[in-house]
Image (cartoon, rainbow, N blue to C red; front, side, top):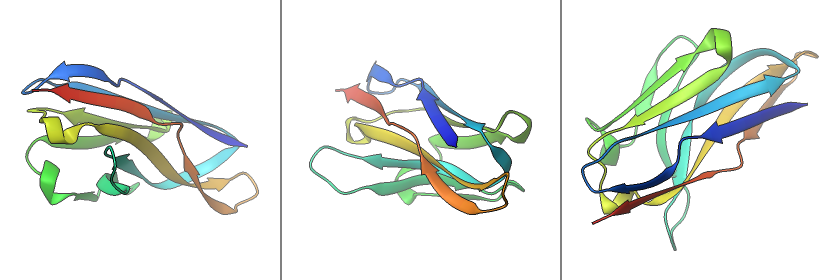
Length: 120
């Protein structure tokens, strides 16, 4: 069993910063892609940023230059540094990971979600 635990959400004023963390634990052999999606109020899930094990990133255009994704492969953890936050960044943020478990089966796992609220 693999578990993803997120932390770091909260309430911040526009222009502020937050850092999200997501740690994977359990029966992990290795992790391929890790990243973040978000679900804004009344909208569908959208990509925020992803990073491959080798460090290749894919960021949504809406967060380019403001958000930075990083990961620590030794800790099975992915981070999202969010700067210059805008009210439209308000959403529940979910981390995910493509995990090879100890049986070498590849599965997609999701965290429980963390609320980010940006006030104007």
